[in-house]
Amino acid sequence: MKRVVLLKLSGEALSKVNGIGIDMEKVKTVAKEVKDLKDTGVSVGIVVGAGNIWRGRDASDVVVERVFADDMGMIGTILNALALKTALLSLNVKAYVASAIAVDKIVEPYNQEKVMNALANDEIVIFSGGTGNPYFSTDTTAALRACQIKADLILMAKNGTDGVYDDDPRKNANAKKYQTITYDEILAKHLQVMDLTAATLCYDNNLKIVVFDMGISGNIKKVINHPEIGTIITK
Image 1 (cartoon, rainbow, N blue to C red):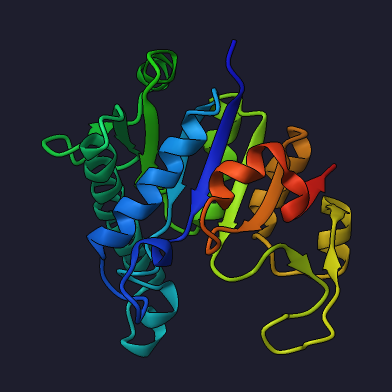
Image 2: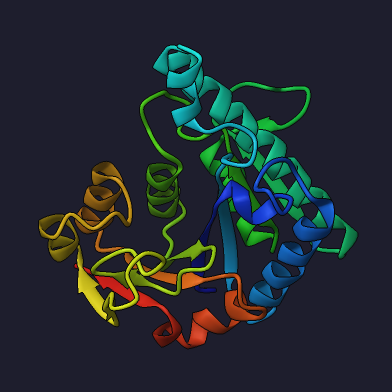
């Protein structure tokens, strides 16, 4: 049986230079790297965010209620998932998009049996629509879907940050990078790696995470065999 991995991508990974919108050239570059990851012999699931389309923090600026704001974000993930699917298909890579919210004419609703069949048929499965509920981040979605597809590992791709640090390395040149760290340490040190729900899900299900920089070409493929390029998070 193939090893199963869940790749977590931010919406900004697919965006234009200013971090807004969908840049199809950038999407195709990411798709090529995802193909390279798949070609190592693993089964791949992907959860993508929507920060390039809508950010929850924008809601407070225009007085949008949290539930509506989260609904907008979940719809944004569907747009990104479809863009990524299109790019993968252009590379002759089979891809299947499943949505946690109903948009039946565009993408299929999430169905566990269909998802597992798609993975068994060597398709890359892209999860969209978040968890289908407000108040949950795409980090939590990634943890949930990783559990559901029985993933061995979550690859948490970051833009410009090559792991977990004790402080923001973009603001503090002396910030220390952790080679390995536990979920307990992340929570105790209040490190902003993922939300509490996601961390708890991973802890309870003994899921390993590697946080790495996807901004370096080839890292999405490299990290599967060389997790030391990032930070390994374990129970």
